[in-house]
Length: 193
Ligand code: ITT
View 1 (cartoon, rainbow, N blue to C red):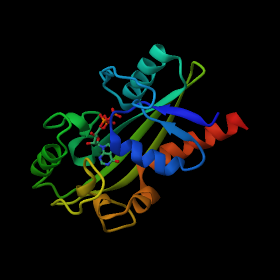
View 2 (view 1 turned 30 degrees about the vertical axis):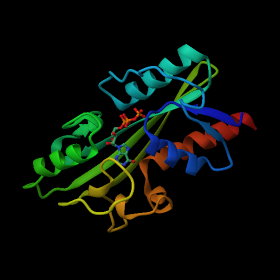
View 3 (view 1 turned 90 degrees about the vertical axis):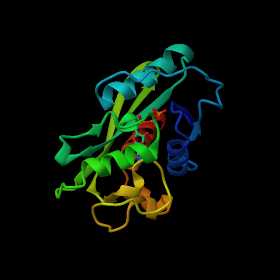
């Protein structure tokens, strides 16, 4: 099995995953398979949402697929924005969401945070989950132009640059998505060998 559909409407995620998959797997987008539905995302957990997205696609097409749900979890805010990361201040407005978080945290000294990705895979009707976590901290101001979402305000442990100040290869050395996706790739390589 060398081909699989990534159920996402987020072009940044697609670029990251294709970069990681390189010549190992051909990652098909929703456009590639002509899938034009609104995909529901109604669960209170990352696991639930990742499964909901993958199941919705699988039920309509019967094609093997995976979906990613990701949240930024801030320690001092009890894990917020978490599963609501895309809609924290405004739906999919990266800048508004980021500035809202910085405003909430302006007097908070404990800047610890983590990104957590859950990938749900559906393979011949069977479901599997893979998790990736990167610990780090939130800056006081945005820095850098690369990446997307909260990348300009997140510094991973072991570095002093934000994800937005890194190339994609550098972000992938640390990232939550890379960790979850490596587990998925290992799994797929084992089942297809
Ligand atoms: P799909 O559901 O279509 O995959 P989405 O953008 O809605 O795309 P999520 O619900 O998983 O995806 O994403 C939640 C938000 O978390 C996303 O909109 C970004 O603001 C943020 N986010 C996710 N991954 C990120 C990353 O690698 N770096 C920075 N922010 C990220």
